[in-house]
Image: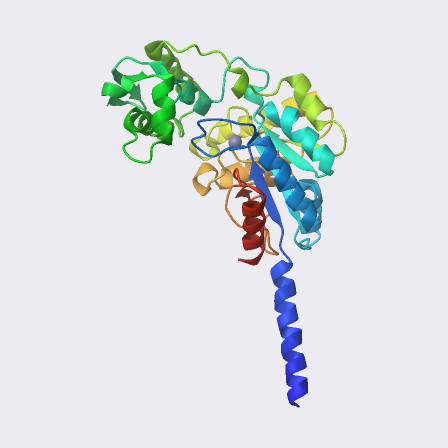
Length: 347
Ligand SMILES: [Zn+2]
């Protein structure tokens, strides 16, 4: 009787353990490059990315997003499945990430914002970085009218930001000095620009560029994929390109018509480049407030079969194909990354 009880308990514990492992993860990367400063932690160094792939290979269950979507559609969650995704469409995804993915035989999906393909402008957060986070000398005072409100910043001493000062202050733990003032201004402007339409944002960025005198041309370090590179990235069976809107706006802030245009145009531009259906979408920024039911309906009606958010959790049995959660993979070394995956699968 006692033995029977123990067996039952063992069986129960086994079931719990098995159900815990019956979860998958969708990892979110942006850049595989040495980038500094990196205010949003979007870049993983090529050396660390290689280590991530080594660790992932050790788990033995890397699969493509399309394979995961197929499994989930059949009511199955792959055990310890790991899916790699990249957002935005930086050129380093082709130059640095794809060769490593091929070396390890690990698939990935790269979500591209088509309005920036081969374009003459950087992503708007990078354009802000170029004005405020790079060494330069700016006028002391900034006045901008954004969404009908006047805003004013006084940079004071931080107007002059030399390369030497940049290095010293970024390393410093206390009193960030000019670096602190510059980062605060960057963050405040980021928040003001985030809910705007692309047209409104371009006006403000144009004003910032004339005010600062900073050259608005695309820096090689912040270059996006060209049409030809998007095609090359998608070539072969390992890397698949997905859609990430046209202008990388927070879709939930846009009108329904604008959302529909962003979603449909992105799909048709990519399908024109790739000459195949594009079936996976990722909401720009991806937080709850960056998309709404209208967005989900528009994505579904455009013919996508899945959409990824940036809700930070694993994929379980209850996963919604149009709200797939993803976890940002930051610039961790092998040991930290192994621990990070372990915690996500077991937490
Ligand atoms: Zn993005």
